[in-house]
Structure formats: structure tokens, C-alpha cells
Image: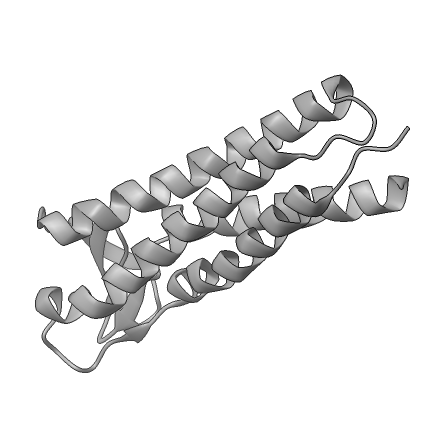
Length: 160
């Protein structure tokens, strides 16, 4: 049982790290000496050093991506906190429903953010010389892992 709890905890922390990195790092779109993320657009030199950064667009779709990514981080942190609370207060045989629901919500939020960004980024950058960066890919990787850990939490029963 201890190994199972450690494995679930490791998966949850991995999802949390993926969500933090994909929300913070400036690598959602890269190419042509530019790097963009949810918060700013940066111009880079040929050596990769950042030369100039300016705030991202204030369009509604980008603000919704920002909000859902922040919500996914908040839901995942809350889920981790609730897991520890339920671990010590839940009766024997009880299930971690609340923890699982918040982790599934985190997964759905990150999926929504990445899907909106996929559909709408062409309105923001009409140049086709851009490619998706690693932070964007990490957001998509965090989606199934968050859903998986949420489902595991819902199925998991507490034992002594």
C-alpha cells in the first residue's frame, strides 16, 4: 500500500511540475528568432540570448488560455492538499473522491487551454515559420497524466 501511495504521489507531483513549467516557460511557439508564451513575446539573437520582450496580446482567447492554465495549476495544488488531508482523516474503506474530482478538473482545464491555443494561435501569428515549443507539448502531456491520476484517486480506497 505504501508503494502504491508513493507512486500516486510521484505521478501527481510530476503532473504539477508539468503544469507549472508549461504555464511559466516562454516556449509555446518558437521560430524566426522569436519565442512566445502565454505572457510575453521575446525576440532572440542568433546565439539564443533574449534581446527584447514585450507583453502578449490582450485578446479574449489568449486570456482564456491564461485563465484555464492558472486554474489547472490551482486545481492540481488543491487536489494534492486534499489528498494529504483525506489521507489522515478518511475512514477505512473510503474513497478519495474529492481529490480525484479536482485532479480531473485540472486535466480538463489544461486540455481546454491547449485546445484553444491550438485553434486560435494562427490569428495571433499569421506567419507559418513558427513551430510549437516544448512548453506547449508539456501541456498536452500533462492532460492525460492528470486525468489518469484523477481516475486513480477516484478508484483508490483507503486501507489501514
